[in-house]
Image (cartoon, rainbow, N blue to C red; front, side, top):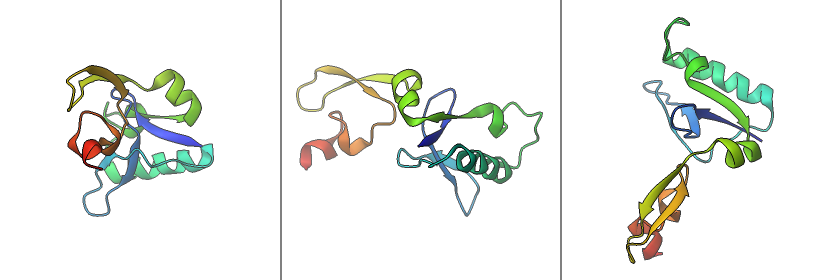
Length: 109
């Protein structure tokens, strides 16, 4: 499995929106093969409509990595405070809000 991620933040990116072409973070989006991930990156580049010389062009802004390598070597962590006990902890940036101790949704389940 492969992810397309934003290089600066290491957020796993989803598909472009049908309405405005904006690509938003989506921790669930993965691709079975490298060619499928490359094709998705091409679709993202076309949806954004930027010139290849622009530094925000998709091929400069995003990258592709295998899931295990991404989680072990690339993905950044952030320090947050637990909602109930106030203890600081570290979690990956792609942790969904309902699985984070720092959000009310975690504690209300």
